[in-house]
Length: 199
Image (cartoon, rainbow, N blue to C red):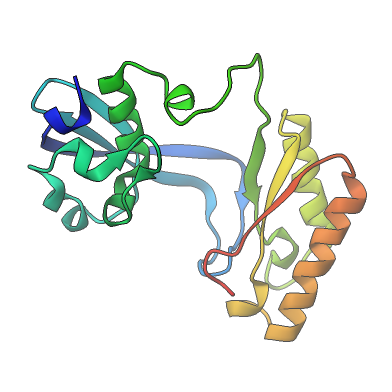
């Protein structure tokens, strides 16, 4: 069966509360995240009985317009989700994999292996917390060490301190200093960055 033969008939939304391994501070746009977060999950149903599930933080009103669309109009295994349906990227990948009877990694062309590298996405602006007595760069390194000890060999660092929480030049320099400190402390780890639209 092809993706074009499947039409989206229903999109369900539900949430769950997750607990973070520690207090999560600011990113470039949002203040403290705290100890818990709410995740919005979507379950997409097709007229042929296939179901895809995945995270999607989009507002409800932005996704229901896809009811009635063929999965093939929204997703191509060679390139992924079309831009207009980007809000449903994860559940559409799962749905296409279910329809094509392939794991997503295989559908998108990855080679099979016995392991994958994982990174932590929980390295926030811990250096700026608490506001009345910021802990500095060592707080970021402590978070990295905690996540490294939990099995995350690589780090995605939040940057963009100068967007909202520091003067621009000082914030940019702090981003550089934090990145260098993480590199020095974890020379074998890969570093990714996430500015949350803060640049």
